[in-house]
Length: 294
Image (cartoon, rainbow, N blue to C red; front, top):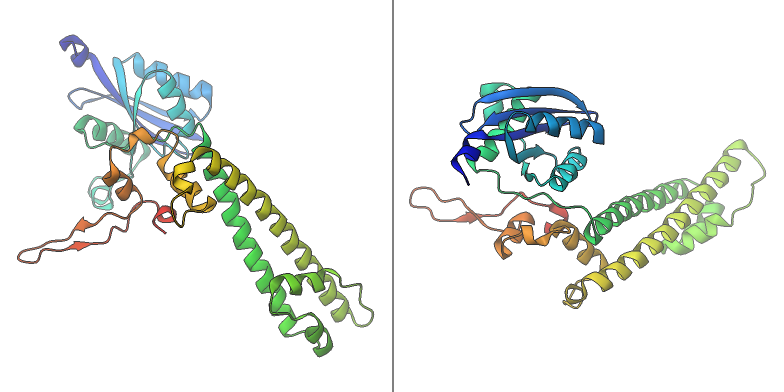
């Protein structure tokens, strides 16, 4: 790079939040030359932040916290404008205890991480099949959890139900148990019995609705993974859900993963050095994406 451009280079650091972002710009020597607080999290706000940063020098690099969540919109715009964006992890707690915490401080720390070369994570592009699979996996996970909760609630009500009702409806298989409860008619008698039958019928209908939702989600996952990851699906033990999770972790720009070791670290499956003195050993990696690790 030309010497003049190096001297004029500035680096943007951004601390992201739901409604507002805070930006700090430093020069190539690490000196803070500008702070922009509380820009709105919309395209107009992102363009204002970009124009402000460019007015202070030659902007080529930026460090953004939460590129996959609160900073996703800003990350997309910066990449469209040719800015090299690096994903910044939250500052470690020891550093925060020593230096304190504020939004400008976090934004400055993000910029300094880029300047020092410690920022090595490339953000996911979130623009294709991998992102679609991530969304479907999120919906499926919550549906499975809700369906399990529903059948547990239904069974807990049957445990304390009147003997004739419990003996008639209690089945080992959830499908049979739910089918019987869904066919219940309005009971005659006490308010307790009426409420019990109505509640069992509602829970059964909820379980059936969630089951239908899961079938639709599974069919979509099967279709997308079969189209986009045939080689992965052909591996032993890899079904639609496993393939979807692994593809979502890799992202729509898998070239950001330099080698197999990078993927292993991302999945928390890489051994970490834990040696001390005469003891030479490794320990399990507790970081990374826990869904992919599982």
